[in-house]
Length: 545
Ligand code: 16G
Ligand code: MG
Image (cartoon, rainbow, N blue to C red; front, side, top):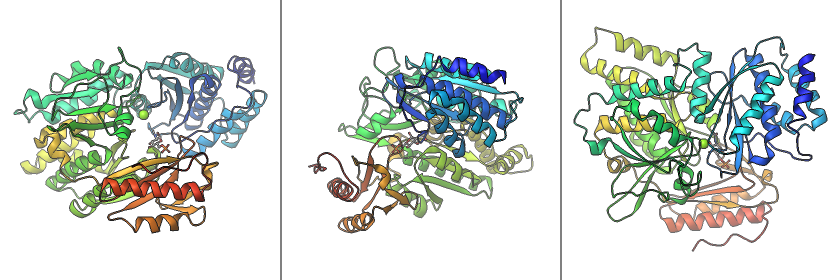
């Protein structure tokens, strides 16, 4: 076929370095940008084939999120704006690793296996972050699409969640919104303004938010969005990319891992601050108190605030809808305890990675999902949206129910349901705080986090660790879980688990306990157990203190 000749010719312009093997990781391929040109071309091919298969528009986002500037990566977006299905991750890995001369065979295998009609039209949306390598890498994706005769639209610089949004808008014929950056701002900002409309006693101080844009795409996009907010939210933007390096000592990942404010930002005591990550699909909040102590409000705190708000509204609206919070093993034990015992909401635990949380959240009328690291959103079932819409339009309901229904309707519209979105999450949190008249300190005191510690252990092969029960228990190597159980027993309110990372060649260790000393000691002892039982390499882990 003519298109296959074209591929042979064009793929030679995007050659694969011999011997390089890469895996489609937790959320796509990610490595040093220099190794990615062939991957991008091939993902252009794969997205085109996926588009033919689904008869819908597919998205390809070029970004390495919170990773260093010199890295890059690529994520595929499925028709409803969700992450690509797992069986296609396999195809992605096959295609990415085929030797140059075997590329056509690998592609044909996928086409055959998936019974794809090659005469079907294909459409691919492409976006990129601000990394200097992103321009040529996204061009390689576009080359891949055109090599197979697909149509493409290059959105240029957009956040990851903006690209997810575009794909969903396109495939729902505009029902989700208009598939433009302008459409995105209009939809989410209008909902925000509606939500905060009756909170007229908000002072300028309360409307003020200090934002760390991680020197990335999120900063650019917030600047573009600002005028749509009509001063209802006044953002002072730091780390906007004009000086500092992307993700360098700033951004959501840095703040969460280091448990300290980013550089490049001056924080006044008590001031409400937040940080985005490098592609703006993660957000964390924080403040420092009058003694200069840093307080982090992570994904667990956001899930709690949002689910409490939604549960109250559902009760006021008299709607019998099932709400649940989806977390991972990293969720602080205090948050789970508070949600289950005080809020009486159903809590579910899944494996790490947005796609896992997203799928479980889809099982409920209202599924709030967040990873502790700040990835998350809320999903409303179609039935839930319809019930809320009906109630909002019903002229025969009392004022309280009506008001709650209207708030719920605007809440749905301020949320990017396709994927966790720092911009949309920020607008939602800001709206909730405004409606509740709550300060960040008051939000922080809803529950107190248990002290915790995360460590990494290097082992010869991290695949020797296999886990079950949403990664909370290790099945292999033999004896490891028993060792962890015995260590945990030594401490109060303690919990610990280990899992192989999906993005780095390490085993991750998590521990929490009643004091920081205990959490640190437990994390260290568990690291030693991993080192000894799972083939540790290099020096033995040292105690933290
Ligand atoms: C990826 C995931 C993130 C997860 C992290 C875990 C997405 C969009 N991103 O960054 O959700 O928390 O991996 O990394 O799914 P780890 O396996 O190295 O601990
Ligand atoms: Mg990210």
